Image 1 (tube, rainbow, N blue to C red):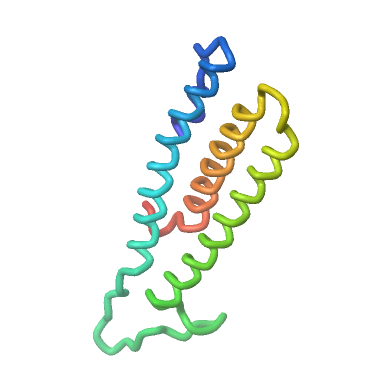
Image 2 (image 1 turned 180 degrees about the vertical axis):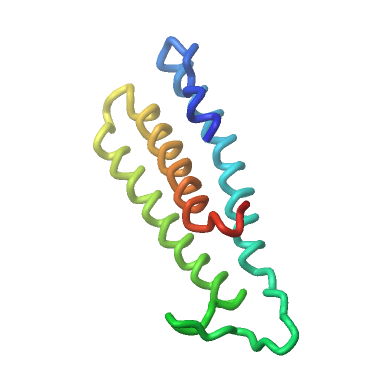
Length: 131
């Protein structure tokens, strides 16, 4: 998120410079995204500590508590759906801007915006385990 706040490519002046800069930013953001989602999934896969006399999974007022298996399966399904959405959204941006010199910039911005928004969503969704 800090990279986004700093602004992408403030010194790029030409279309080529902007496209090269966005390509670099996308590479960094994609690596950060993979590291972040891998870490979230690994945390979800950790077994809950068992307290003496307690039975896991716990049944609470809203139902059976998630297990590492159900947590990671749900995360994987959501991640797969998000990847499909992201690809479809940026393909739609490509189709819309195709034919113009701005197409690559718009696609690059699409990927950056969506990946950063997804990391923000995950941080919010899993804030209790990421602190």
